[in-house]
Image (cartoon, rainbow, N blue to C red):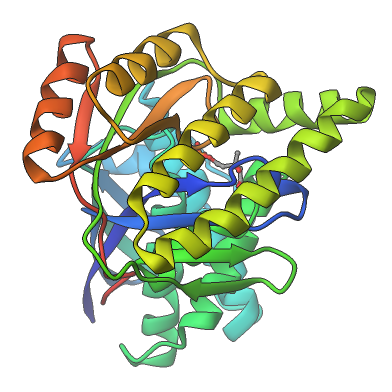
Length: 334
Ligand code: PMV
């Protein structure tokens, strides 16, 4: 059977890092996608191509039994990283639906943005692979999304050591989602008016895992850090209410507060300070680092569509890449 899966990328609006420590967060899908074309193949082999790079087949034939990569003859970090998520997702899915069984797949992945910039490429690959695996084993495209989200989150946890359900749940269900990590639950929240965001990224110097560990370590040492995490949780609750009311001025102010709190956690780079300040000077209602920090993604709230175009040109002059000027609606589709 042949499958085509479209997996949206995501942006965090509020609550990153604090969500790892039990606080809620708000994230949204973006109208840009990782696409996965796949088919079942004989044996338990995996053949993966990425952005049309067809690597020598022997270098990508993996021993699925031990989920060990026999050999990857490439220095492409992105491919190595994706392979880890794909093999882990398949193991978790097969253990859930067909314990002991291993199928072979040919998977062609395409991503419009590089991995590890805070826009959810790893989560998208996890969600897409889980969707593929469930559809293939259960012989249906009508796959239960709660199961997709649950198994994708387990994939991220196993690969990264620690991960909140924010990225995987948002990407599975789509739109703006209020994530309660304790349940976990992904509540759809909708603004009555269109909010015009610009979303972009700069190079990210540290991995999410490293930044999560840094914050954890500081939390262990400093009592004051607990108050910052609590304050972020409060910002998220307030932001949810203002999004639901369509009060963009207040949403923007809360984005600025959240950025300040991320700075207090120690994850905002000098480059992002410059970008965020320039965006505010140019009239953004709010601007913040988005995701784990250490560079990577940022998001700003514009006054209208025309203003979003102005903000876009401002950040381009600073060397950042803009990927979207609106949020997305859909989750993973097969
Ligand atoms: O990997 P990123 O940059 O999309 O951000 C992850 C957000 C964190 O809250 C820092 C980690 C998590 O698992 O939620």
